[in-house]
Length: 187
Ligand SMILES: Cc1cc2nc3c(=O)[nH]c(=O)nc-3n(C[C@H](O)[C@H](O)[C@H](O)COP(=O)(O)O)c2cc1C
Image (cartoon, rainbow, N blue to C red; front, side, top):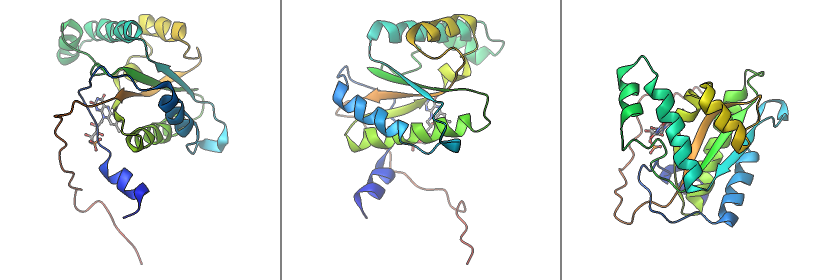
């Protein structure tokens, strides 16, 4: 198997991180890979806001919890009131991927960029995970004000985030088994 296929097959989501920060050099490589993804009509309307500051990340988690605490759904309210809940698993870096919601392919553009982020990170020995909560809650007024303050364009919605960092040395990686019946080849 070639290196690219090997990288794709061995990538996996990581939900526990050490304090070790991703270097700025590696982060820039990862963000360049993100911005090299396919995107509808090559409009490149997306934006990547990388947070590397612990206090800003903690503030983001408070906004997530604040919005969840207002939810009608008990499981979200539980997260909102939890002292230990951290939507980004204490990763040292979080990349917020946003786009103008005016084009129907905005979601797909961001998903392509996120997959490039995960694969580029994995190729550099950096662990990652898609984080959904900021996108889910980006219309909450407190969250919106926070996102604007950190540089997410005001006319953008968040479609996903990437947690980036290093997994603990003793992290167990589950072996992947692909679900049967998901591929059809017509000849
Ligand atoms: C659209 C999308 C949203 C996701 N949201 C989250 C999330 O909020 N938190 C999380 O821990 N994982 C999230 N994931 C990661 C999936 O749970 C993970 O990719 C899946 O379980 C397969 O595992 P793997 O990535 O290790 O192959 C998300 C993945 C996708 C594609």
